[in-house]
Each structure stands twice: as C-alpha cells, then as structure tokens.
Image (cartoon, rainbow, N blue to C red; front, side):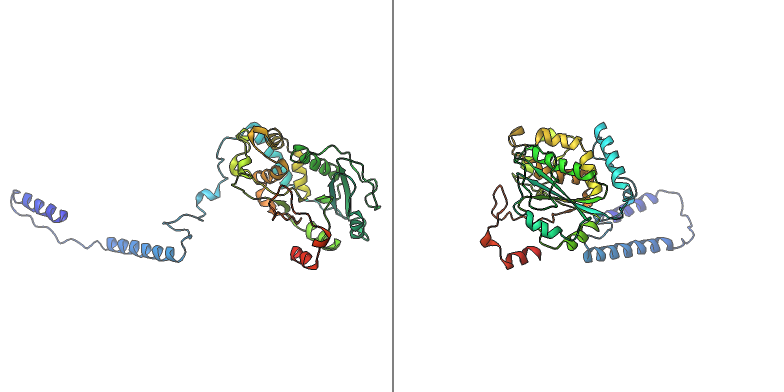
Amino acid sequence: MKTAKFWRLSLGDMQFLPGSRHRPPMKKPMWIFVLVSFVIMFLTCAYIYRLKNRTACNMFNSRGCNTIDHWFPPVPSREYTDDEIAAHVVFRDILNSPIVMPENPKIAFMFLTPGSLPFEKLWDNFFQGHEGKFSVYVHASKSKPVHASRYFVNRDIRSDQVVWGKMSMVDAERRLLANALQDPRNMHFVLLSDSCVPLYNFDYIFDYLMYTNISFVDCFKDPGPVGNGRYSEHMLPEVEIKDFRKGAQWFSMKRQHAVIVMADHMYYSKFQGHCEPGVDGKNCIPDEHYLPTFFTIVDPSGIANWSVTHVDWSEQKWHPKSYRTQDITYELLKNITV
C-alpha cells in the first residue's frame, strides 16, 4: 500500500511539469533477476541443509565452523603473568622435544606405602623373568619396610611423613618421580599403593603403557561441593575455576609429563597455599586436584582423563572400597578387567 501511494504522489507531481517527454524503452535489467534468483536458491539450499544438520557450519549456525579465526593462535582470555609466561615456555619446550627411546626402556613402579608391602610376594611373581624392563621405588612414610622380594631390596628412597589430605601426599609423589627420573631408561612412571595388585601379566602391562602416547591421569569436572566447591579464589589468576578438576591420585605417566611435573613450581605453590582441609574455609584435598588441574591447564590433550588403576568409590566415603578375602571372586576380577 505504501508503494502505491508513493507512485500516486509522484504522478501527481508530474502534471505540473511542462509538456510531456518521450522516454526511450528501458532495457530489462536481466542481471538483477539472475542475482535475485541466485540469492533465493542459496538461501533455500542453506535452509534445507540446516534442517538436516543443525550443527553444520552455515550462515544460520556457526557452531563447529573453522572460520578465519581458526587459522591464528588463540587469543588469551586475559593477560598472563610473568611467571605464567616463563613456566609455559618451559613446559612447551619439554613437551615439544622429540622423544628419544632408549634401547631397553623400563617402567618405573613407584610404591607409596606407610610401611611393608603386604602383596610384595605377589609382585615378585609378577616381575620374575622380566629383569631389565622395570625399576622399583618404595616411599615408606611411617616405618622402614621389611622386604620379602629381591626386587624390592635396597629400593627404598628417602621418605618423609605423609598425612592424608595434606600437601605432603603430593610431595611424596613428586619425591618418587624425582628418584625414578634419575634413571634415563625409565620411560613410564606408575604410582601404586601398598594395596595395589596387578590384574594382567607383565608383558601386557608393559606393552600397553610403553607404546602409548598419552598419560593416564584421572581427570573430570565436578560442579558439586566436593569438586568445584573446594576451589579457592586465592588461586587466581593462575588457576581459574573453569580449569579446576578432580581425580583419583593413582596415575601412570610418560617421561615428558613426569619432567614437567617436577619442573612446576607456580601451580604447585598455589595448591600448597590454598588447597588443604580448613584452608580458606574449604575442604580441598590436594592429591585429588593438583595433577588433574595442572594437566588441564598445561596439556589437556595429553592425558586420557582416566586411570589404569581400578578404584571403587561406590560406597561414597572418604576412602575407596576395600576388598576382603570373601570379596575376591572370579566374577569380580572379570568385571574389573573387562
């Protein structure tokens, strides 16, 4: 209606112009019709494609698109501190260094225990016949262990007291890593407790761990009170709540990851100061949060986000379920190893 009214006003104005003018016949602007047809065809096809795949990259939905921004390095969400820049340069160079596999690589089995190992004879059977393919390290925090296997004799490292829920647990893990890293043939590092037992034979475990390109560190985001509820804003700016993670402490990591854990001081100091029960009004457990958060920030694609150590938290207590003699059945072992 507005268009028609406009043209009536125009024609009304024209009657005051002197005389009539002869206008030559106008050529049809075919290019306009071609352009309009092309636009209509494009919009129709885009709409139909969007219905088939709502997450496709098109003009209606850019989710999943590799735009021109994808070609450039990601822009930091904030300005990094000097310590962060220096630390990440070190971490990047370590992770990007070519892996030189020794002629006879070994796996370091690191036992974190209060005293003697109750399953040491079982581990003795596990190691037999595979000399030269493993190393053993024992951190005994309470009493000097009495060893029943030749593979454990003289394998105790200097130990210190370990208190559950304290940073001393992480210190013991790092102490084991530091000692195991002294042997250049150790290429994979497994943290074990005094209650751990092997569920597969040595060859299977050796091949599985040695020829993987990732580390097995349990890592997940827990928005609840025993997850993100333990986060302290005093960890800012280096540790943001979006990167705060949780996981079981039992890990298996490749040498490069073990090295960057030992090279870290910045993130370690944040957890040391603000992640312990009662600190900042929180109930933070450092051995459950430090490594998962550290790898989420430094190398998230380099870990599996799960551990090769079976832990049963179904009882929802502070400690995982303990298996007694009557609990050990063929069905249990089958369910764990499947």
